[in-house]
Image 1: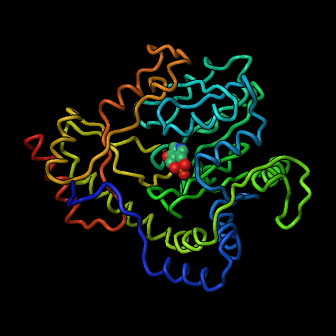
Image 2: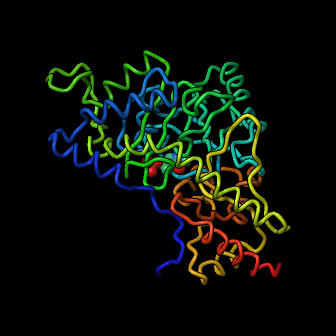
Image 3: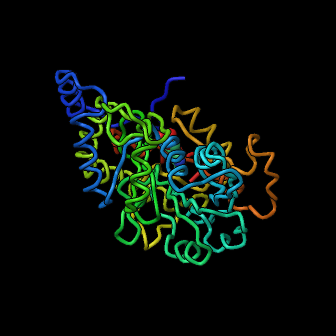
Length: 365
Ligand SMILES: *Cc1c(COP(=O)(O)O)cnc(C)c1O
């Protein structure tokens, strides 16, 4: 089906093409000058002491879990409301995901339900900063200290998102940001791993580059793999990160237009905006009545619409964990009542009004 309005289009243009041409002319297409520049711009944006690139957010999470020594049998606490990679990466590292419910209003991990999930096997907590808003990290840090746990932040959707003026992904022991095509800035595929810890950084250097610190040597102190990005991707990344202030501003304007135009509809609720975080809208995410019918109505009007995540504890692939369902109610609610509206940069105010009017028509308001 072709849509009048897509769910998402990445914001790409001349700046990316100029950099790509340069990367090709330079004939350095694995990590090279653009990778170095991208890393330095990422450090500047996040104020992270260290930053390393990875092929994508999923593998960045996997690598990060290895770097903080997650091993067979270790439990890692993760919100039940996230993309599958938050949990699958734990399994691939040898650990066991333990799902915790989220807050019904801000969609992030419910900090009041974490402590009950901690056992003798718990080694880490993975807060996910969902839909461009930070989880509440201070109470998580208190628990991590009390029980001697590591914090690994899934800030895949958190580029430009700050918790009390610190960039998400830099507050725990380690964190990742994804540059997948639908993320706030994109390189098609790609990710960055952030840490302020020198030991973790050193371990990551070995793990991501065949067990050596620098390419070009053929003695390998440890076993590692290849988690490099290409300079072509980093060329795009450099252009993207320079455009981020504009991306943020326009997405916020779009989001505000949705809030203004839909504010009188009682059947619609926007995510609660917490004071400890800014919001870089990932989508215009709303809780609605009659979700399925509304999605159908929007699709009938050629507006591409997405539901929310499906509860992780109910995923067929996690059936073996036997998570008790009654303890996790809010992810269930969100998946049954949430929808994501497009908020990408190239949308016009006219298109957003069209989406809003289509919704108003559905509710007869
Ligand atoms: C996108 C995403 C990932 C995975 O990142 P990829 O780069 O697509 O592998 C992990 N966690 C969350 C919350 C995401 O949104």
